[in-house]
Length: 172
Image (cartoon, rainbow, N blue to C red; front, side, top):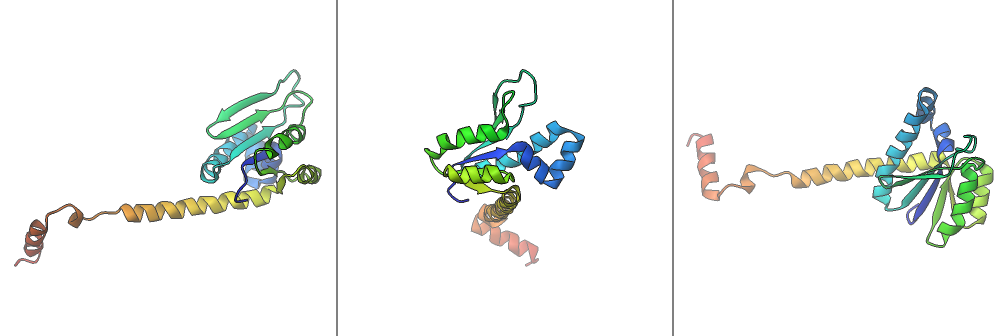
């Protein structure tokens, strides 16, 4: 997944595949959507790719396609009568022209269609592992960066004063 430029995610499919989001969805669907988008923020920043999270609104009477930008994430709600799969199938060919495209879904048919259009398929479980690995990498880099920034009194005090302080400490 190193040089992927665009990722399309079937939002409800992923929510239903990740146990912790599925439990959250059962309590509050909006919270589950927000948590997914929140998790993707760090990933998008680290990878430098564009991410589209697509949520079905095809059963919502009178709904029109709606696009929101949440940080670095493009959130799409489909229009009435259009599933996330339809939106993804319509969008992959456009994005493939601009670089590598991946689709995150557990839907086998959608995976096959993605491959036929020149995209890459990623299962929700594979994607969750990738997110967790990146989170670990970011934490490790932050620890190293903090250690490198650590400074001591010696870094700021004149050597003569430092020697005098050392003599005082040792009662000399």
